[in-house]
Amino acid sequence: MITREEALKFLSEKIENKNIIKHMIACEAMMRSLALKLKTQNSNLKTGENFDEDEWATAGLLHDGDYCEGVPPERQGIQVTEWLRERGFEIPENVAQAMAAHNSDNTGVAPQSKMDWSLFCGDSLTGLIVAATLVLPSRKLTDLTVESVIKRYREPSFARGTRREDIALCQEKLGLSLEEFVKISLKAMQGISQDLGL
Image (tube, rainbow, N blue to C red; front, side, top):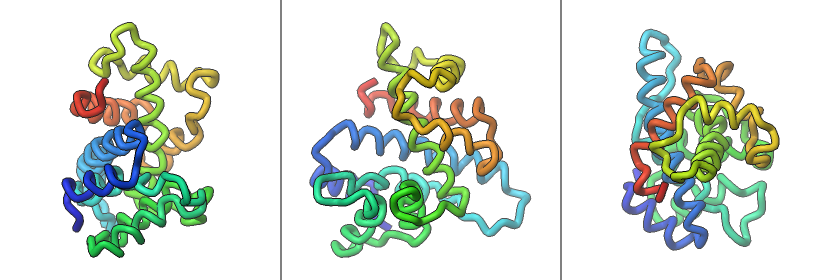
């Protein structure tokens, strides 16, 4: 499978907007933490689910790797896999599926696995966490609380582009309450706050 270093090099070549790269790094951390949590939570279930932390993290890191000029919305999440495979990188099918499904409204690829749903639900949550951090006097992730994120989540006028209905699916699709989902994601992002510049 593609290494993290190779993935970051690819992203630096393809994506001009550094904030989009930071968003993907945030998703990478969130996905790794969710894989660990859900693996533990589902350990007694014979679901056939794959909770490989590296694969989950890779899906988070690369999912917007084609969010650039010349790629129409219906190809975003699909084109990235094609580009990487053309360069000879191995992208597992479950990673390709999760990346395509995170943009299911446009790609038509429906989320199915816990990995798919984690990226689908978490994609907007990482953005909301960043927005909630930027309105703090310190603008520091370490000062942000779960309660503050949930308060902002409940304010429709705050960060209007946030797909709150996608985040809300965490309970049904992942078996995580909103509070738990926010807690896992926020802690993951706080752990890499220097990489995010927050």
